[in-house]
Image 1 (cartoon, rainbow, N blue to C red):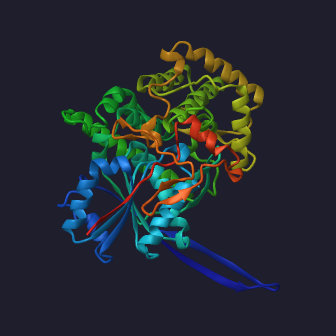
Image 2: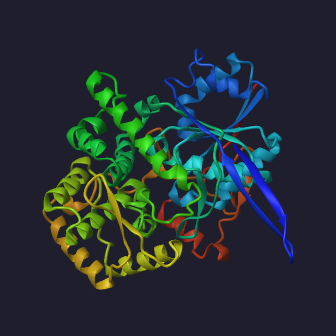
Length: 465
């Protein structure tokens, strides 16, 4: 929630406004958010007597019965907007379908929408809340490693626009975020690995102790789903909980003084200088964690060339990515992509590169004076180094599949439903055209062909009396 304090002064030629907006929101660790023994979530909705929830269909298929039973126990009417979303379906169309559901529900401005899902769902639904009546409350329950560690910390919400990642968005804080790591028990290993990259990001440039723990327990953390897999030794779960709590805390300490990104030198931007192009350029998109891992690995090579990190530290970083099965390279990463990515990010960062790199591990510096020649030299060396690693530096399950684009229901692939006159998404069947959109700047029909149908599959509303 926010609270504005301001003053207005009369000047010779008009008026001057000076003020600041207080941003006030909380995080709560909880075990079993939909356990009827835990009233914390229900208490948020007691005064409203009802709940509009936005969730990923895969999440609903696993936890829907628990959600319905939970709110029924507390006498709260529940309506659920189920969506299917992948990185290339993180679009204004999906955003509008959620807006339509909010309108149909008759949401009040201060009535919080409940958003349950991974970072993609919380990004799009959060943006819908930011735009709806210019400021509608929401409560966030992330269900993936990226959602819990990274997306939950920021107040940024957005959709992609054409081939530009998060080009349309806002800064809009939830009134509460509930952190329940038990969701990881049902998360596919590929998505656990995907989120592991975010912890490497924050620890490499911000917290040496966490990096050391990731390095020591890498395989066990991924295989045990951060200690949530049945039969995991208590010691591994304890380490996982320490890492997760430290990672979130470090992210918050770095992010909260700069929630609106007024300062552009950002430690948590390590891995986010060239990664947007890595993520969306390939015909089949790279998962976010793999895209930023390529960026981080290359950035580490650039830092090593400058003697900002030692050869030993450089090896530790690259070896950790490799052991985790994360990408450090892909075949389309070339000098042309490097130049395009550099030009694009400098527009976002007010004409400077501001590339975050470790100096040494656990601390960060920002590079602005890197020439194209130096970047290309580092890329050639990086490509050469990758020949020494398994798969020449490419990751395991690095590219999105139907579980990311919405065409797998809990591990079982289903056929996308695409209509010639449009498709439906949302509780009220909002229709979108399949025709190429000039405003998108890309061939949206071509995007469908490249990802076997990224426009969202028809969904339906569920009302629990």
